[in-house]
Image (cartoon, rainbow, N blue to C red; front, side):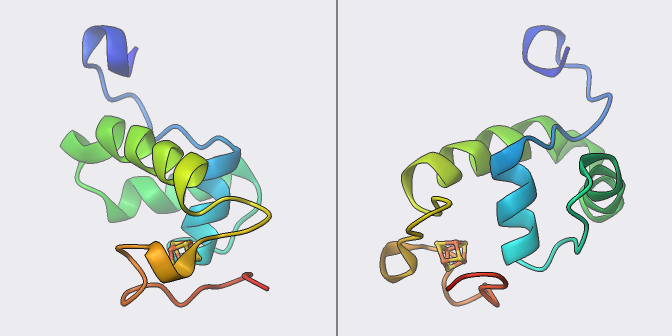
Length: 85
Ligand code: SF4
């Protein structure tokens, strides 16, 4: 809905968005519905769609599940690195 029609009906929380949002301290919840509520409360509605796309790309290229590349991350100065080994 968001990408095709521009309708921000919620913040998409897939595995990347959930993991990175927890690492960044934006939510403590592993449950996607609860994490989505936290993100929706933090983000302006007109950023909901782009936020998920950007975080998914970040999760695929930099903040991967097994080996986050914190040394190359543009968010390193802001990130508490919650849950990173
Ligand atoms: S600093 Fe590390 S843990 Fe934090 S978002 Fe960047 S890659 Fe992920």
